Structures are given as C-alpha cells and as structure tokens.
Image (cartoon, rainbow, N blue to C red; front, side):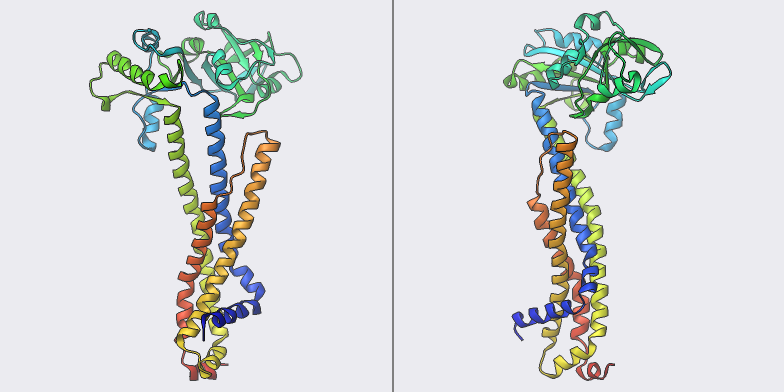
Length: 414
C-alpha cells in the first residue's frame, strides 16, 4: 500500500472516534499554547523595556556597587555592597577626571512605606533627584513643583508623590503643602505626578521621590549609594565616560586588577544586552515548563493509541489477510499518532496566538502600556515541530506493537 492510501486509512481511523481523538490532543494543545503565549509575552515585554530604555536617552550611564553579577548568587552581593560613596561622586564630578560627564545623580531605595494620620501605603520610596525624573521619563508634576538641587544640598524634607499615593493618603483633598511620614520623619509634599502607570521598572503612580541626601542622612543613616546615574555629553561620549569612570574609581578604591573591581558600569547597550540575556533565560525556563505539558500530551497519545491497537486487532488481522505488510500497519498507526499530535500543535498555535493578542490588547489599550503584539514565528515552528516529534516518538511503540501482531491470532480476536 502506498503512503497516500496509508495516510487516508489513518485519517479514517481518527474520524471514527472524534471525541476520543479530541481529548487525546488536549495535552498537546495546552503545551503549544503555553509555548506560544510565553514567547509572545516575553518578546512584548522585552520590546516595551527596550523602548523605555531608549527613551531614557542614549547618553545614560548606570554605575552600581559591588562586583558585576555573573550569576543569580552575585545579585545579593551587589545589593549589599557599600562601595559607592559621596567622595566617589565628588571625584566623578571633576572635569579633569570625567570630561564627558554633564550631570550625575545618586539614588537610594528606601524600604517601607509612607503614612499620614494613621493611613499607611506601601509606596516605592526613592532617594533621588526630582529633576532627573523629568530628564529620563519626561514626567512633570500635575500639581505643585519638583524639589530643587538646593533642596538636595540643604537635605530638605520634601517629597514628590504619585497619583495612587495621593489617593490612598489624601483621597480627594489637596496634597501639595501637606505632610506625610517616612520612617517617623515628616516630609512636605511639594508636587503630585500625573497618572502614568508602569514606566520601565517603576509604577509612577506608587512612587515617592525625596532628596537622596535626606534619604541617606535621616532615613537610612548610611554613607553609600545603591546606584549612581550619569549623563554623558552625547551618545558618542558614552564609551569614553565609562572608561573614565572606571579609571577614576579604581584610583579612588586602590584597585590595580580590573577583575577585583567593587563596582560595575553599564551604558544603554550593556543594559539592552543584559535584558536580552535575562529574557532569554526566562523564556527558556518557561518553555521548558511548557514542554512538560507536551510530554504529558505525548503520553496521552501513546496511551490512546495502545487502546486503539487493542480495539482494532481484528481489523489488523483482516488487513494483513488481504496483503497489508507489517510496514503498512506500522505506517498507518504511526501516521495516526503524528496527525493527532500535529493537529494539536496547529490548534495550539492558533489559540496561543489569539490569547497572546488578547493579552497584548489588554496591556496596551486598557492599561495604557506601550505594548506591541509579537507573534512568535519561531515559537510557532517550534510548537508544530515538537508536537509532531512527540507524535512520532510516542506513537512508535503502539505502531510497532500493531505491526507485530500475528494475522491468524488477530483474526481470532473477539
């Protein structure tokens, strides 16, 4: 029997038990849907973050304390490092040290929340420069003003808050001129930011910005910074600024061997590369989890095909009696398994694409994110390829079992 007729016979066998065939491919469908959705959402998120990184300006340089992370365990060391201090900032400000630097702003993360008259809200509190908020994210206060560089120098207790913070602590009342508490210290609200939602790694609506000098001296009581942001003269100056920063800090910290640096510097390109690495690893992990569903689906295909072989023993005997070879029988049942898994893969691609589009629509239209729908062509090819491979692998044993049946014993089977 030629392959065309074998294929037709396999399809006829599947059509005989439509409900069972449909339930059999469910595990494959779920696995492929998961793969498509994971890759699409990850690519959309990467695009969103890259766009926001680009909007921050190509001249941005990020300086962080601690050894450059090489693996997950290094991030803890980075967060706990105290290697970047005020004297380092002052050294970097000197034109003879970093000629391409035009501005610098340390930042600090302040744990805990904010409160007012017994009401508490777990906001994201950052010790930073309010003017850098405008520079990086193009966000101006909807009410009030930003605190100034003079406020930073004088270590004033002033704050700029997001819309959600205002709503939680002040309701419909005016917030500008009123006071909130951060770790029992009163701060005067000088500005309220417009409703903006998620921007880069921050939810602007839940943000509270205070002068970094105030956060360092009165709130955290430390003499170091969690991060330092540097603005280069232009994009072309960034590589030179990075090298000058490294040289200056190595002199300040008495470091001769670059491998012993207690800081690391990143330009926009470095940040994008790190993002690609992180999202790539994350995608691989999530796709691996989704592959478990495909394996379960494959076991389901094998189980049903074994049942089908047993039920159709008499049919196998008749086909062999009229001239079908072992290869014909093997091909028929193997094609049935591959078609089952392949159809599951196609359905999974369609459903996965639809779910990914709905998620993108919700994130872009309803939540206001600059999210772009990405249909993962590679994911679709991976889904259909893997699902067919699953059908081949898990269908091989039932097909061989069917082909090995003795025609006389098969004809006697009731």
